Image (tube, rainbow, N blue to C red; front, side):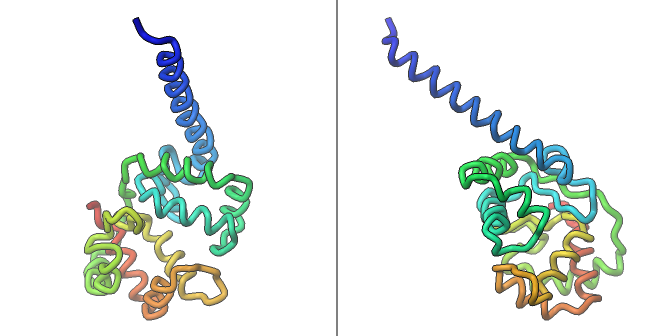
Length: 189
């Protein structure tokens, strides 16, 4: 015969975990209108976030919440979330599969980008999938979004805490930015 307190503890744990999953999904619903269902964006100027590393998602969301990264839209979205809710969102999206965006890229740009990408591969890996648990996937990310991000890193007035990204981005010409983003956008793995 099972002890009632053991059964009660089991049921309470089950219900709490189910509630946590529901809460994460409810929070994520607010993200889907821009970032797409399951975090797979269909808008070239908005990144896919499903399948990104949990550590990365949480860090960026906290940077927007705390104002160390600039985005009026994102700061407004996450400003009222607790650190626990941000952690739930990060875990939720990290569990989703990474789905490279289907996009057309200029083949000549991809070839130049392959050469330029060597500057990025130390952190992002050869194809943009670092798989280190903290660096964002850029393989198959929208080229337009990647260009926007690199240009923000080149702008000293934009508060962005990643100094290494700023340093690399500033060394890229406009042509190299178009090429390297075409290269990473074309990578499926």
